[in-house]
Amino acid sequence: MNARRIAQVVLGIFLGAAACGNSWAQKAEGLANTPQMGWNSWNKFACNIDEHLIRETADAMVKTGLKDAGYQYVNIDDCWQGQRDADGNIQPDPKRFPSGMKALADYVHAKGLKLGIYSDAGATTCDGRPGSRGHEYQDARTYARWGIDYVKYDWCNTPDMNAKAAYTTMRDAIAQSGRPMLFSMCEWGMSKPWEWAGQVAHSWRTTPDIYNCFDCEFSPGLSTGLGVLRILDRQAGLRKFAGPGHWNDMDMLEVGNGMSEDEDRAQLSIWAMMASPLILGNDLRSMSESTRRILTNPGVIAVDQDRLGVEALRVLADGPLEIYAKPLDGGQWALMFLNRSTQAIDVHHDWKAQVLTDDLSKRSVDFKQTVYRWSDLWTKKTGDTSTTLQARLAPHSVLMLLLTGPAKS
Ligand code: GLA
Image 1 (cartoon, rainbow, N blue to C red):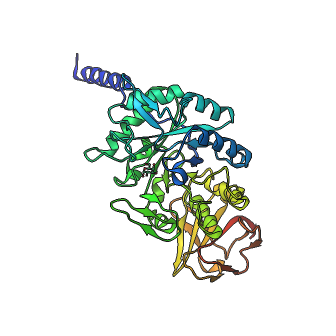
Image 2: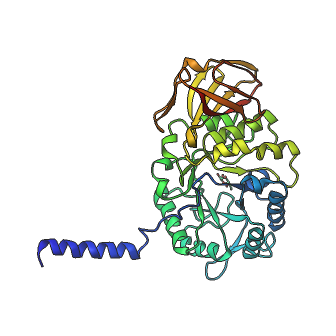
């Protein structure tokens, strides 16, 4: 055998071994071409969950129009777990989920929705239930058998573990289970997952947990909770890492959990501009009509779900006023004017003063050359960019515009 032939044989053996092993496993394609939309139990209910809540939430998601608006995952967070059986198979808590997860998945699927579950890369979850460490393949097979569609995978109790290795193991385990499941990493941005997780997961959390307020921070002991603006500020520099199939996850929504309506509208708008997953965190069974209308705003959801999948860039920061621009499919743009302060501010925006440019998507608009029509996605007002935009922004509010055009040149 000559040297070239030996090299071919060695390469063949290597490729064969790799194909048989797990190192070529892939996350399921096509599950998150746009950011995932759904609901999760944690923000409102923490450990106070059971199968009735999950069923009623699925019912409410359909009845309130949230399903028609695009929300499809019903995700059970921490505290569903009971003990492992003698063979190491994870069981749901028999008191809270007496009918078992397969029956619950069947119920949710019959509504045209999907069921998500939660585990942790460590031996125990954040709330002390059994985690998946050492059981990754077994747990993924169990989830597949139950008919699970989405796995959120947390990072508590992992002091000696490497995030890339641990999340890759679970990705491979899910791939080998044979059931496509969306893989949502929840590692809080500690190991800069945006730099390495594009092939590993469909989304990765970029920050510590959200805290239910617009502009504050909460640090009990070692854990931190961040308000809406603090999470937004931590997205700086991350937009180039996200796109179809791999998203920066800004954590779940707090809309309907007690912020003001302006703040609720602002959170949904910011998350949509940043192409974050939209995972509801409120009680869908008892939400007010105004919360329902906020969460189902079709124009704002369409911005989040735009097929280009480009996150907004900040084009202006002027004291409390910031402007974000998101290039959209078909030459459109979304523009968001954000008032960060607790005082109202007046906006006078001369469109022609600045060329709107995004180096990442290689798109730009010179409003001196081209007139775009705009429509306000919350108030439905319309106008165009030939005249200065005048608006009063209430405290902690946004003005969110869809720009279509050109109207005329
Ligand atoms: C962590 C996660 C939260 C939630 C809890 C559950 O804090 O970041 O989103 O899943 O654990 O214990």
